[in-house]
Length: 247
Image (cartoon, rainbow, N blue to C red; front, side):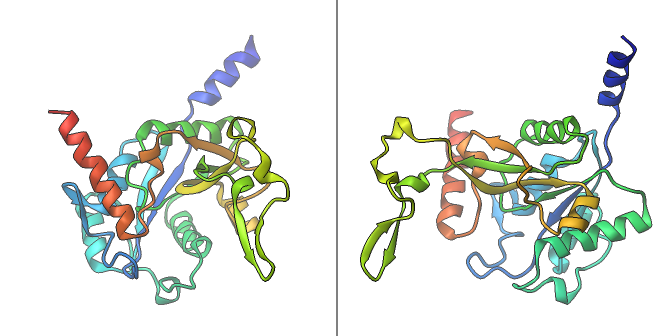
């Protein structure tokens, strides 16, 4: 009985998770995408509004090298304590280094963290419910295992081919013989959710591991990752459909 009450008490304790939204100025495929309007607001605001007010989020921090993005973040009342250093704003800069830069600053200026939640603004339609579920998975595992957003693979790897000097060959020998109903489950990273403890991120220098916990996104719109104009068109089409159905 005492153990059960202790578990309930621990479950009710809020975690200290820093939500980090990374939004670099440069974008070759969609210029200025983070400040570009999607629907009625800049792209970055979709992620900010999704995470604001969640009980386990101690702060929301925008890491950017762009003063225009920084102004949007400050107007939304989230932390934008600095512009990101130039060495962390190149195409070669890793997301891990960008995250550690923010975590190290936050823990030196504020408090120790249980987790760092990376939210890429290119996934605008992740829901509060899905984020909450991901945080609960993190809590269930005593914030020792990373929780990573994944989606069902639209094209199964068993059905993929590669171009070789000898012609087209399957990536997986014998995979093309499977019927769709007999295929094992396959997932892809969708970029919508990365949650890990600062200790593990510093030690492993990656969000990914063999023991990571999947946060499965079943709704296709939540898995939209805006990387090209085609992706943007799909996102706008989804919003138009939502507006029509709500009238």
